[in-house]
Length: 216
Ligand SMILES: N[C@@H](CCC(=O)N[C@@H](CS)C(=O)NCC(=O)O)C(=O)O
Image (cartoon, rainbow, N blue to C red; front, side, top):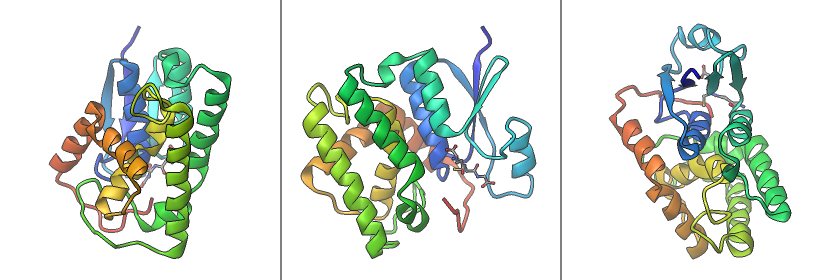
């Protein structure tokens, strides 16, 4: 079997890359990382070498190429790590629902508080719409922790692709100094303490490139 390759962007900025990367790490699959610097004149063509979309992340597994972060998380779950989704039907359905909700939504938060792992801008980016997104996200976290989280610190107890999808949100909350209720804060702390998240954040803070207006 050839070693998997994951094409990602700058760790400091690429929230979609983090989602796929952390899911692969948790799956325990060995993979090589190909990091392509975003926001350069050469970025699009470099990514196009691996993916038709010109966007990262992209996973290459032998002769199979998977793009779109959620498709990668699903593929990794299906192929290598079924534990990345809960097994009980109700929890699994809930996990899929919130995973897709994150993937397709929360545009105000994403637009106004772009991921910048090493940046600290407390109070910046807050609008009524952003607060509405934050309220919905923290209510998802509280519901999950209460209904499904008994066996661990994550949304469904152990780490799943739902946690992978929300990991960049936790980083944004740190960057923009978003105040959280105690349950949401405890969940955010668990994500921040997760070894793979620590590894990503350390790598992000060691990167030297900076992008002034990273869109999403
Ligand atoms: N829906 C895509 C979004 C991917 C995306 O927008 N990736 C950004 C980086 S986080 C990108 O590749 N941007 C290309 C560029 O800035 O040139 C996914 O989930 O993978």
